[in-house]
Length: 441
Ligand SMILES: [Zn+2]
Image 1 (cartoon, protein in one colour):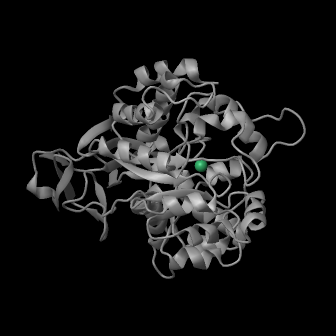
Image 2 (cartoon, helix red, strand yellow; image 1 turned 90 degrees about the vertical axis):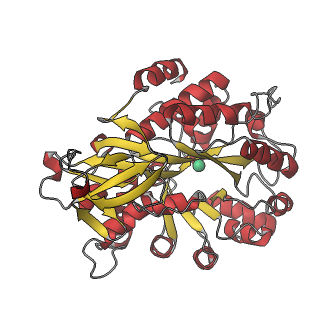
Image 3 (cartoon, rainbow, N blue to C red; image 1 turned 180 degrees about the vertical axis):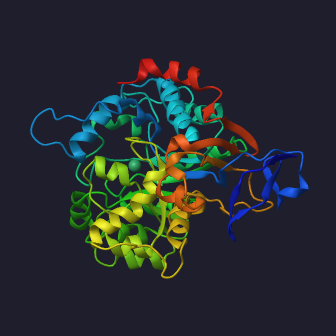
């Protein structure tokens, strides 16, 4: 049994001092009185809380961070960014996919993320030909997560067409499959060989990329299902033109809108969509830094207030779930023109809890887990934040985590009972950085 003795623990009962965490194997064995382990030194002014969960990531997109912050000609938007992203996507060989993914996961681990939902859509060689192992690139991404030691839920993407009126473009052939059966076959193969830190889910990319008939066939899948939904107005317009329905209503029509469904973005919900999402008890993954980087817009207030929210780093413009969490509230304030938009009335720490819940247990739930928090029996996935710094002086611990913390505050990260970050660093940091370098830019 390993014992962690932070100054404070964020438990389901609130922030408590005088406790320690007993870790046994991959589980938390007990959250007990610190006096029971007098031999273990206290870590100093630190807060232990559940490891963060990044519910929406495209790891390979880390490769061009900082290289698309300029305009070639005319205006730049989501669609022109996407063309540039495809160029990068088609340059990465399997070694590149693995190396860049590991770099993204390294940065996630060092910023407190213990579980990533990887929305994986690079499947084949750039000309669309399958690799000798048809799951080669998915396995490379899993190997990258394994090297870093974080949990991964691989959301295997179905991408069947460019749009309602066009087949896959030449630069989209890497993403394509023959049909829903091929997608479900890949999901089954990957799930069958999955290690203890791996889950596999399904991701119909969007209603642009997967037609209704195929969505219906994919609805036989009984795990978590994620999809990009209403990120762009043009996507809504095309869906209405093809079906007379909003994208979310189309997922409902197909049988995919259920408790295991997570809509990613929903920046532009159409009439009835928020009610549709809430009554299905489906999740909503918001990726504020990417949505701003791409000029997508802001999740409207009603969805922000009513839906079960989790968070994603998406395009890896930054990897900082601490700031993504506070953006849920701050962007809401900007939209509403008032303060404490998501704050439950009268609860002094209610807003901090709500934002950090989005970054932890709601993310875990979105990836098919439970997210019970720091309790006996829960997975030993723990982040230890160092609050011994001027920026945290006098700030209550949970409010420091929710409203001030940065990735650099992460002192330790434990995943499944293994400490993979200590003193803010991952043991494989320099190897992973060196290996990724030739593939960046
Ligand atoms: Zn995405």
